Structure formats: structure tokens, C-alpha cells
Length: 140
Image (tube, rainbow, N blue to C red; front, top):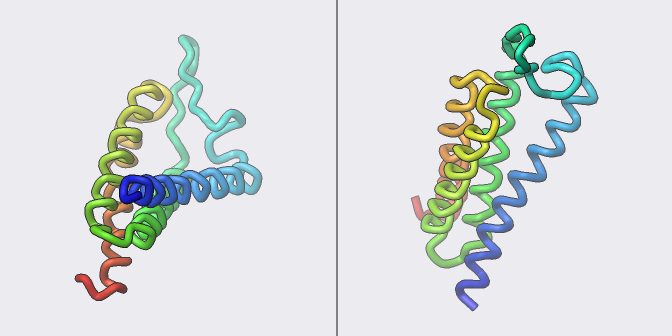
């Protein structure tokens, strides 16, 4: 039963992050389609001219990714009744690994600095959200 509850806490936090990122990304693509281009990716073919991502898009994307990660960390700490910090740390490690894998898969489609910012910032967002929940509980 404890393992099931731990899995539920982690899955709920991750689902919160994923749903928020998908919703906001979809909304931004509808409202501001010219920020990144039609496909949402930079053209990296052999004859492609290297485009720089729009600074506003980068700032907004990094910001909402951090906030979505914080929401995921908060939800994980909220659902994990016993040892919420351990669950939040586990989610942060999972997010770090998945973000690094995503950055490797999208090599050449995004600037390296942008991918590194997302890899570093999303686990920090998870930790921040979890710590906010622990502060509310009076643990911190």
C-alpha cells in the first residue's frame, strides 16, 4: 500500500507538470505562432539558416516550465503523506533524467544553452514547489 501511495504521489506530480506544459504550450502556439515558427522547432537541415529563438519565447518558456515543475513538486508533496521531501527529491531526479534525455534527443534543434537551462531549472522548480508545500505544512 505504501508503494502504491508513493507511485500515486510521483505520478500525480509528473502529470500535473505535463498537463500544464502541454496546455500553456498549445495556448501560446495559438496566440503567438510566429515566436518559434510553424513547426515549433528551429530548422536544422543541411541548407537551413540558423535562427535564434525569440528572446520573449525563451523567457516565457523557461518561466512556465519552472512554474509547472513547481506545481508538480507541490502536488507530489501534498499527496505524499509520509516523507514528502523524499518523494519530491525522487520526482526532481526523474525530471532531471527526462529533461537530459530530451535535450540529447533534440540536439541540434535547440541552442545548447537553452536545453541546459531547461535541464537545470525544471528539477529546481520541483524542489521549490515541494519546499513551498512543506513550508505550508510547518515542516520547514
